[in-house]
Structures are given as C-alpha cells and as structure tokens.
Image (tube, rainbow, N blue to C red; front, side):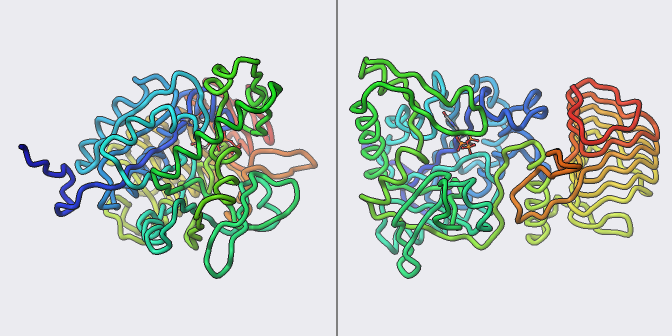
Length: 444
Ligand code: GTP
C-alpha cells in the first residue's frame, strides 16, 4: 500500500479539503471591456502589474487547505496556457487547470458540467470566485465563518449606497446571526444595500444537489423564452428553449445568481460574510483604473517590494515594470502602473492611469485617469485625460453636457495622439490616429 503524501507543503500533513474555481467566462462575454478585450481576454488584462486572475490566485494560495484550482470558461484552451504555466511556477503549492465549457453554460452550469473533476478526492468545500471582481478576497475568514456556523454556503457581501444597490444581487440577512434570509438578483425596488461580491464558499454536499434541483425546475417549466437581464450582452441574454426536456436542461444556461442563491436562502444554512475592505466590479474597460488603484493601495499597505520607491517624482503607490524606461524627471502617481517596455519621457505627468506594454509617452505629455493601450504613442505636450469619479459610486460613466460619456479615457492598441493634442473622456478603438483635440467621443 502506498502512502499518499499531500502535494501541498503548507498543509502540514492535513489533506486538502477545499478546492477553488475561478469563473472566467468566454470571448462572447466582457463586451463592456472593449476596446481592451479586443486584444486581451479580460481575465488576463493587467491591473497593478498582474493579470486580473493572478489577484484571485494570490488570495487562493493563502488558504492552506486548497491544492486544486480550476479555471472554468469557454475561451479556447490556448488562451490560458502560458498564464497557467507561469502561475504554476509562481504558486508551486497550487495545481491549476483550465476546464473548457463547450459553450456558455452559465455561472452554475459550468460548475455542474465539471462536477466529476471538482468532486475528485472528495473535497468538503468549494470556493467559487467570479474573475471580474477586485477585492481582498477574505477567503480564510469565509472558511472560518463556514466552520463556526456549520454552514452549507457562505457568500461574500459588501455595503454600497442605496442608489447603487439595485445594480447588484441584494442580500437580506439576519443582523445578529448573519444568516441569509432572502436573495434577489438586481431587484426592481430597494430591498437591501448589502450586495453579492461574486465570491462564494459552498459545501460540496449542498452545491451540486442545488444546481440539479434548479435544472429540474427549469426542465419542468413550460417551454418559453427565458430572459436573463444582463447589461453585458442583451442580445445573447434570451435563450430560446424547445420542448425537448433533455436539450432544455443541457442547453439552458444555469446561473448561480438567478437560479441557485435565492433557493439556497430558503432551503439551506446560508450565511453572509460582510467585508469592510475594498470591493469593485471590473465590467467596463474604465473600471480597470479604480481596480488598479485599489490593488496598488493594498500592495502599498503590505509594503510590497514590487512597487516603485517613493521620491520627489514618485507619489506612491506606483508600479513600474522592470523593463519599462521612465525618465527621472517624469512625475508619476498616485495609482499608476507602467507596463513592460513602456517608455515615459522627460517632464511627463501621469496620475491614476495604466500605461500598457510598449506604449510611449513623449516628453512633457500629461496622462490622467486614462488607459494607454499596447504600443500606443502619446505625443509631446499632449494631454490625455478622463474625469475622476468617487470609488464609492461604482460608476465609470459621467454626464457631460447632458450626454453620458466614459469617465476614463481609453486608447486601444496602437493608437497615436499627436503632439500638443488634447483627448478628453474618449474611448478610442485600436489603430486610430488622433491629430486634433477631441472630447466626449467614441472614436471608431
Ligand atoms: P451582469 O453582472 O449581470 O451584467 O452579468 P455579467 O455577464 O457581466 O457577469 P456574470 O455575473 O454573468 O458573470 C460573473 C462571472 O462569471 C464573470 O467572471 C464571468 O466571466 C463568469 N461567467 C459568466 N458566464 C459564464 C459562463 O457561462 N461560464 C463560465 N465559466 N463563466 C461565466
């Protein structure tokens, strides 16, 4: 008989009882992340110097009982290959695998489809993380609550303003016990300002039977149009079903938010762990700027060695990739990330922005509240700027002259801004040359 030694070094002989799943969606999702998602899948977009899903893995790596991580989506396998190879070296305690759905199955449908892989080794608990959120992922605290309450499910929640709440899944909970009493996804009227952060911990025994019951309920319903309101892609949110039960339960998208959570509130021991730390969604391309700021601030609080040392011209937190070249007279920060091989000329000012790989900012240019795309060029004395929005507003658009515009200016891949040109609150698609001043426009 061979003795099985846990692969995980940190477990000190305790067998890994927890697994983690990161939901990444697919190429038909993340449309609000355009034009940036035209060139890089949203989960691999760099914020604070690392791909969005790297931040999820960093949090998962801090849970001693997790060894297996599944990245589930319907992107082609090749999309995550290099990332997973690099991440496996960087997180040697984790075994990371990409599982590809044959089509979009929904946030619960993908989990169910891969249940055999997930349940292999009989894990007791499963973390599920949406990849499109930015937070400190307090997974150990959620696990602690799960054990203390002898729960079947724990959801991460945060408080937002009453006006913002109806854009999210809303949780009504018992203020003393923290038990979830009621869950409604994007309610039409106000029920609570405690919202779903898109991070869950389920007991294996509760999760899959709940999905199975939801599938059964779906199959038992008469054939009709199912509507899932998703601002991401309205055309794709109507799924025509037919009379064939088999194909209905197989093809119908099953979503945790709409199909599972409210039922769990009624039937399961379901609790909410309320985080007081930062949380933001990463939906629109502009939302990468506040996410970048929040992760940089966290890294700064943790004295991360990766950040640039503060100086007269570096206002922390600032991340500068080791291969980037920043002139010592350029003033950067706060909340700035400079990507690989980017060049920043003399006298440049950059604040609250992301400058991506191979971009060039010429001397005396100014970049504020903006994202400068891969290989883009900003001319000398040019000004590329967005408008600040309070982090608490959970918005990346503003009203200017009665028109809704993007608060963050975004230059897609290989754009050019001429010398002395001013670009304000614009989204610029890849390969565009801006030779005159523009404001409040989408440049196609
Ligand atoms: P809204 O927030 O309602 O506008 O919808 P959304 O499409 O922007 O996000 P949703 O809540 O549907 O997705 C949450 C997370 O799950 C994101 O990280 C998505 O990439 C991911 N996701 C969404 N649908 C699927 C799916 O069919 N399969 C997989 N594997 N992941 C998905």
